[in-house]
Length: 316
Image (cartoon, rainbow, N blue to C red; front, side, top):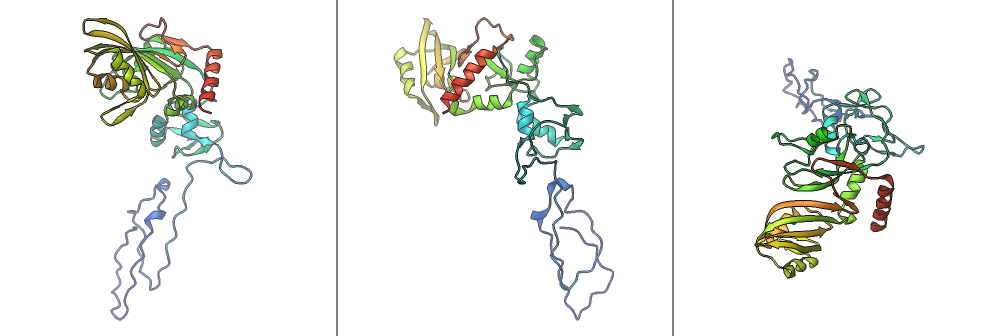
């Protein structure tokens, strides 16, 4: 509510002063920078105060519209993520830091609608139109985080990529692997494709090899075909097979379709097994092959097109 300075006049005791009407807090536009604690001009309360008018809301940025006036286009955060600038969350932080502009005007909301990235700049640099969707296979080393950065100083996949693939364009990971999980991690320059791949309904197969310690039989592993509940979490079908055993140590191959957080480790722990090494060997038709930790290999365009066609059939 706008503060008022006390009047220098002596109140008229014969007339009851009308109370100043409070501003409607719901009409305060956040984008204008106006504060409800700003000092306003001193004035006398009138007997019949008029309802205060809300301040006009300042648009954050131009919005694309159709001829009928309806809004169209995509959110700027979505377009920038699709262009491989950063993740949506990171782009929202960049907007909050006033690092993104449209035709020279600072963008104040990630909900700004655009039909293209024409005129958009990040840190003063123009953004190119999104390139065609591309995909890479990356052998994530053990001990690296699937994250943009780590405030604790731990090494991330981007630190590794700077060392092993310095010419790689801006990419984002499809899904994630735990700190101590290694193996195949798919990278793409298309944020929209990333989200499509991460949808639970997609159901793309992921295969892992786990080195475990403990006692387990093939019959126990085959019971996972019907799914299992661990600590209240329901996991869907899991295909698991014993590969080889040495004493109480064994390698187990596991294929699943959900990829929930720490799913493989949680399920194996539920069976009384201790995981000492976990490697993802394939994701859909893509395999780790001969890639060494830190290596990157581009997926051929024809293979990517074929895979996306398969995804469309699965999602029908």
